[in-house]
Image 1 (cartoon, rainbow, N blue to C red):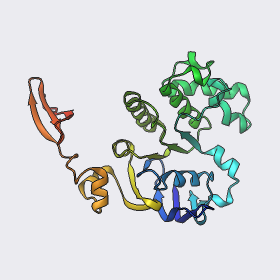
Image 2: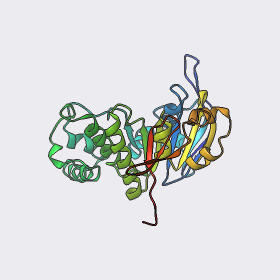
Image 3: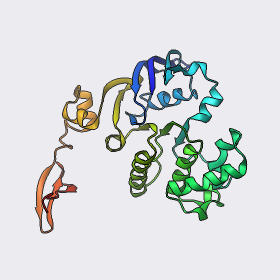
Image 4: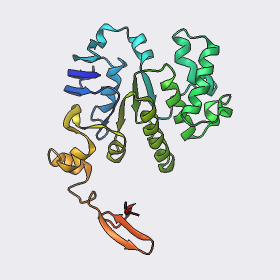
Amino acid sequence: MIEFRGVTKRFPEGTLAVDDFSLVIPARTTTVFVGSSGCGKTTLLRMINRMVEPTAGDIEIDGESIRDRDPVKLRRSIGYVMQNGGLLPHLKVIDNVATVPVLNGVSRRVARERAAELLDIVGLDRGLAERYPNQLSGGQQQRVGVARGLAADPNILLMDEPFGAVDPIVRAELQQETMRLQHDLHKTIVFVTHDIDEAFLLGDQVVILEKGARVAQVGSPSEILEAPANDFVASFVGIDRGTRALRRKRTANGTVLVDSSGRAQGVLVDEDT
């Protein structure tokens, strides 16, 4: 479990990125921070592994303050996946994935064996292991990034807008892969995105943020949709514009659900057939 206790972050130039933020992130679930650019969501994420230090307040992991943890050891115990993969261009795929275990003292041979297994887990052909990052597609690079984040078998996995730079089809595939991995591995995932649809798809707990990382609403996707806390939330999730309203439309091939613009959003299935 991760707990933020009255956390504030003010950068040296005076920018107040996070203003008195408190939140409990349950273990072995996916919590998504979602909000517009500049609202502080990435700063919150990076404070968990001390890449950014809080100005005030505290963060605890399983009841222990991260201030009492060596920052390097803390970072190596937490998986981190960023946009564009963040891979080391001079290392082969297999060695990118093996990086953290090797730094933690695991032999290169054992770390590479585990890295090969992780390529299987994230759906990559082992034939890619000896390639360099620039020889991979964007989607493949992101999968390698996820494998590297899992390499030390961390309890916590931080994901900072990991799918923002890939095309919509690949993004959808990676979202499904993330849900499959969470179903199989049961990590504590903290995911950052500006896309509310992605947040609702992946999150057990969704945290909608305003500027300064002020919490507009926390809840499950269904709780937020059923009872938005205020006008800001209703607008952010699209309720006030009717974009979440669906209606039935009969076609020659069955009944589909369309949104307020007439775009198909899904197929209505008769569970009795």
